[in-house]
Image 1 (tube, rainbow, N blue to C red):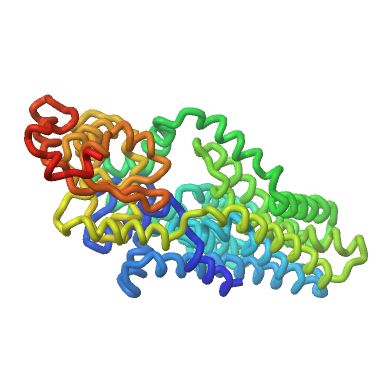
Image 2: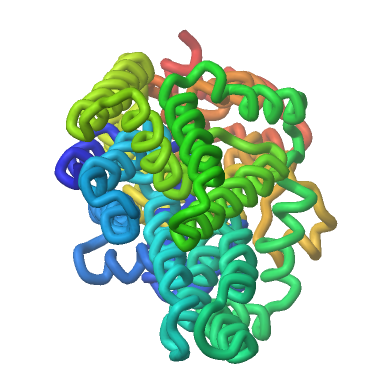
Length: 497
């Protein structure tokens, strides 16, 4: 499974939203600080994690993807190991452990998103490790396990706030199910571990409280839906999309069977309590990410490990009642999961966009853009690949929809879309890269009138070689087509074809 995830991460894994995560890691490696030097509407630990690996293996998306794939494999291994160690029926332990691993590593959303440059793989391994530490902590009195559970869960939230419910759910469960040692001591150690994991965020907050508050809290609560008409309808469609997914139905039904049938068994109270913890973690994460407007299907993958553990119990309950052997039960699940994964990847991969395509765009941008020229790229991937410093405010494309007073925008490193349009129309940028989904912007900006040369690298466009009079005409208030009397037709014939 780890090998398959590694291969996919190096060949097909690509996310339009991973660009600003990779760019943030690159800027951190260059000595800049998130929030204080550039906009980064995320908690920063995953970016620092990626920057650390870039220091060792170089600034490449392949490095980040490989580490993400290994982290995702680690989450599957930890989940399988938990089932193998704790499952009460010895004859089914191996089969149920394999099932848990398959339901995680074969999940389509996990494969597509947890092998790319976003923090999914990083957070998955942390929350599963925190879960394992919490389960062990209730039976031991030392400080190491509760502190480790708090640190790991806190570090996951410091990598992505989508995992924020994990820490409070684990803490409450430890306090309720504690069987050895002081509850107060475990609470203190858990809280201390979580606080240590958030030290970098607190340090940045002390240096720039307004910037950190905006990026970590205000942006998420207020500005994520800016300029998105129909976001509420989109959210309902995402929340109902599990109905069309055989993988999601299999995972959900097996998990429900495991929880329901195990709850009726008076034996194995410890295993039953651990399954209840999986239920509460999955439910808390599901409700929480559903409230992240707009929400996306990949947000729900953080619940996958805990549903997979419960589903392994469901496989035993269903399989043993039907008289099936563990081997054949695992084969049936593996066939269903792998078949659904292959079908989904084939359907979505035929016309998809990959890193090799983005590298072709970046090569063209490098070819036509001098090192110290001004580059405007609609995709953060281009800045990352070309190592061309982005203009202030261009670190996160989605932030352009935010409109704030000029003083606040400057402090928070924001460039509103209207300002970018005026700067582009004035011919301030030597090269502009823009993708197909922004064709309306291409027409609205009149890039064909501002730049003499362009090339299409599907689905993106690169414009360069500014027409000499464009900026002067805009400054003089005579914005419009270049004047033929100035000789532009002879100098730039492509503009007049």
